[in-house]
Amino acid sequence: MLEQYIETSLAIPSSQRIVHVKLKGFIDRVDKADGWWKIIDYKTGTAEQKNVKVKTWEDLAENPDLNIGFQLLFYGYLLNSRFNGNVSSSAGIISLKKINAGFTPVSVPAEEPGKLSSILDNRSMNRFEELLRQILEDIYNPEILFTQTTDLNICERCPYVNLCGR
Image (cartoon, rainbow, N blue to C red; front, top):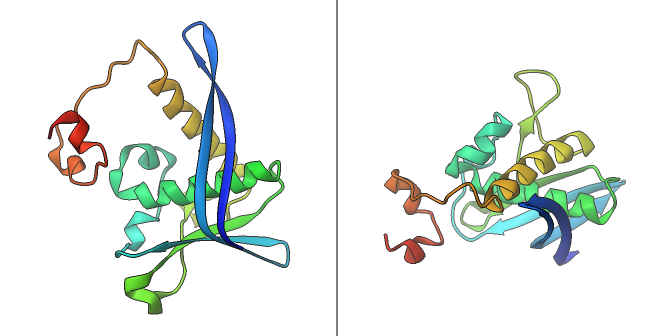
């Protein structure tokens, strides 16, 4: 299936109320074979293995080089939500500049310490949801102030650089 628009929402506590945050994504391609889903995101630029190799869940929230990995996991989360958690999938990129490299899947920490897995199952999607909830709770917490980064390298990849004047 080409070009899948998927959305869901998460209830996030904020001050003295619950905020229902709409989460949505536009997936380039979703294939299904033998009960297995494969999420494909086509990249017109180059993407490297380091952009999709998530060694720890904490890295995913802290390391801007993992932006593509975060995007792929977000797509996996959306697909998993669409089918009420009854999905096992893989999610990866195909770089149009390096088409011969083929499908490069995102990998996440496996249950066995020190190992990585490219299988996005309920365990990994639940862990991603925990991380996503924490990020959203921080965003909606009025006691946590937004501060400009001191690392100007982050600004090079930030889509909001014009808003902060850097």
